[in-house]
Length: 220
Image (cartoon, rainbow, N blue to C red; front, side, top):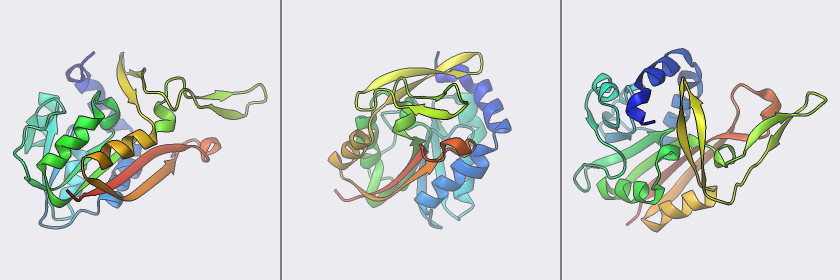
């Protein structure tokens, strides 16, 4: 199933899930630290909710999304499948991506393309489902006493998993944390900050990381 077929599900999910407004978008703003007057690009912008939040800081924000309908709602957005990024070299002061990288097959090219379109000293901020969660076979389980435990799955191996999305499924690509950080470093991204967050709803899993946010600066 392609992402273009998931537009209705995406709009319904965003409209009804308070986690985006209460947790995910604030996490992106925290790690990105958008600056007024700077030019940013949202990689996988959806209907533009995070774009608008970054723009409220006084930044100029453009977007890219696979879905024509979502890009039209976002405005100032191109329609393209990532990667590549159909933008000229050295075009942006900063780039960001929210819950998108785990759905991209070629993460190394994602980081390389982001470096190409970023100006020297530019920043890249990414929020993803934590790799602990995306490892195939990882899942919360409940034992006979009702205690919620965590089954880690194949964390150190790359792999795929399909998760429910409305009446269909969406693909998750798993990479370990070290693979993500090393792929970014190989193309010139220097890690400035990393945040790991526990689950925002399940207190019994407060000791398990749920979201990962990183900010890099380009040092090529």
